[in-house]
Length: 471
Image (cartoon, rainbow, N blue to C red; front, side, top):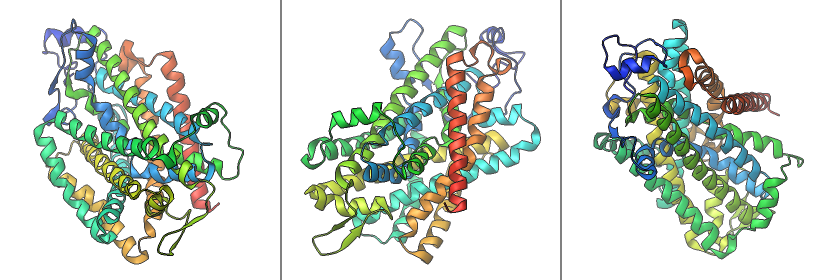
């Protein structure tokens, strides 16, 4: 739906029919991601399921990479290494909650023709624009720092480049994103699909092909149906997993990406768009769950019960300080296959690169949505990347490579602080009949969405208190 389509008195007959069930809302100056807005055609109503499904598939895939970014890896690795399959149920629970929040985000974009940033600007008091925008930008910069660090660590591990040099190299991915955006949103989605398939393929080989890490499905199933947090340290890692799962910028991003589809604005077409975008979210985030579960299972089968590993050269690697680099260094000797470490690093690089593409799109959305500022994509990309690279280079230069884990933790803290400011408005808008008309959240989505929002917000507040109190 085009922005302002339902608010212009002289619009088409189609827009007039929309007014019969959709509330009049303030008109935004331009649509989200204008260069790709309504650029993907959708088949007619009589088309078959698979043709429609193919047309709508894509936005949730872009969103899903935020759920398997380098910020998630450390918590998943720690969970598997320390408690084997004991926290697999937490990964499943956090993914389940994320699915319904993303469904609500897609619903907002489809029904109102606004992304979450535009809705906040139009529906909340004027004074909230600056603090909301600055908070979003801070969270996006923090998330980008996690992607930078993940990609840089992977480059260092694969090619032996010093970490600071690898961080600087990540700045050049701006050219890749600009090329993809110029080619259209479908090319961006295809690129992300390849990277997600790379991540999934690497973990499939690690877990199911290499004999040393084949999991016990019976043990995994038992852990899933008998959740517990009884062991010491379980609660802290469980909170970390949930806190690292839902990314605030994804809620802004999804509500904009669904508007790249050129669906009609009659009631039947709106319902169809909601249905297929909900299905898209469920499938894409289920894939993200499998990836996160794969990381945990790999750590469980490789590191559980071990405190350290002695490498062939005599170097002793103690576990628990920086799981990402420790995993790379020890996977090959522990699994008896050199390719194990290479696959791990390739998957990490794919994770960082895919997440940084979607983070940049989210930055464009919040800047234009909250402030109505429009700058060239390459300028936006460079600013965002510099905000991530400069602090990373300074901290790594002062403290060395061991600062990576601390920076990842810091990025998750910042994201946790911003998350309620995205989730609560999202649920507020999509639950409102005055904003959504007959497409306001049904009872089941109200209950699950608000419960998830309250639980995630509470756990994030607890995690923040724990981090700042030093407990």
